[in-house]
Image (cartoon, rainbow, N blue to C red):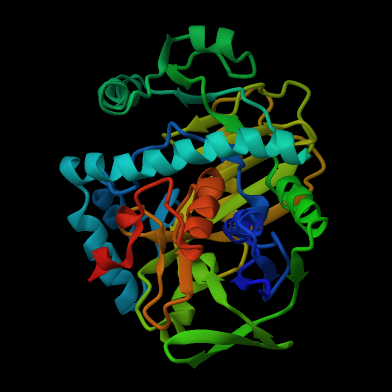
Length: 416
């Protein structure tokens, strides 16, 4: 019996995770990417592995922030005004979900994928000896103002009682005892001790090397063009480097997936949510714990070999320009909380598109175009947190094996 071949389109963390578990399931795997492997949103994100992030972006009050941002060019969460039917339809559907009931209901399938992924990461990193600076230091939400700090107590109660994810509360300068890199005078913080972090670019390069050692093939600068189909099945993938025979295809193209809608036979309701990061050496007084400053939407990741400020959310279409004023929001925001918010020299200014769905759930499902074409995209702001669980589920579905998670919440059917 000949070996089954699967072509994975997209060399980000979701594509590489899918390749890993497909190879384990006995498939011959080829991963193609129109750019470089790990060069998209998987490169410059903050590397937070956060099982605490169980709630969707669509929460009560979120649509109000989006509407106000139309008139606030410096808002960290911003919708850039423009004529774009797909964006406005997406925002309308997003607005419909900004209520307590949908928020809680969506949190459960998010949590299942996050928990599965963290469990897989801990096995994967040890077994494959991935050099990715994995650290389990937790995650600290720090607040300057008393009102939002106290308001989070209600969210903490919800997370603890409904999802079993309680935070530890630190009032006033007690938060500086936990993390001395913080300035005194803060209102306090909420600490999730089960979260972890890693360096995304090192994860991708190390994971790729591990897979190549097991005969997984990677092709860069290889653009997907179209499928060739016979009797309702894809038999070849046409690319800019020629045709590749395939017994199955996985589309893991992140925020670019809507551009493949015609090939996939369905509309893909993903919007690119533009994020930014700045990578630099570790400051002298570097945090030990990864930090999020919710009032300013800034995240801080202290890696073993560097230091990264990131976050910001901008719905600006497929605009890949780096706006200096958006980077300044990161440095100015961090300066309000940290003794040493930055260090020199800056190693990289980066921007990337997060694949945002209006319900904050990814798409992990068969594409209508052919029975052996699958989609794994739309992981919003937590793609790196969800990657191993997604990859394992993809391999199970493609292989017609019993899935370790119920795939129904991630189905395309929810958009019809």
